[in-house]
Image (cartoon, rainbow, N blue to C red):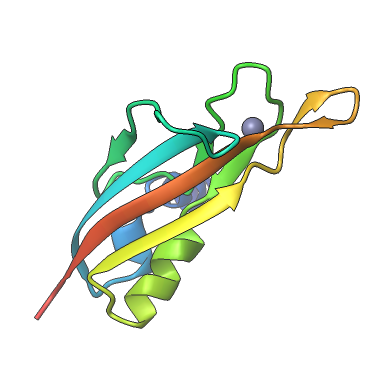
Length: 114
Ligand SMILES: [Zn+2]
């Protein structure tokens, strides 16, 4: 394996949302999983600048359900929004053609470099 290929792939693995959006100073993100949009909701998963690009669905029977968080942040950052909120139905399935009924809800705050 060529050495520069290794460095390239390591660089990709370590990229963070603040590398993607250099104007972000700090970020706080909470991801909720809602069953059919019902309350009470589970404890949110919380992230900072270690925010992963994808968050997996919390439904144990769900397969391939995940939500891409970074595009939400990119849109918010391009508008310099200090808070953001986004809700998306899970795109996964429980098998035999049954869709997953969970919903991702993402909210958070962004601080920008001055
Ligand atoms: Zn799901």
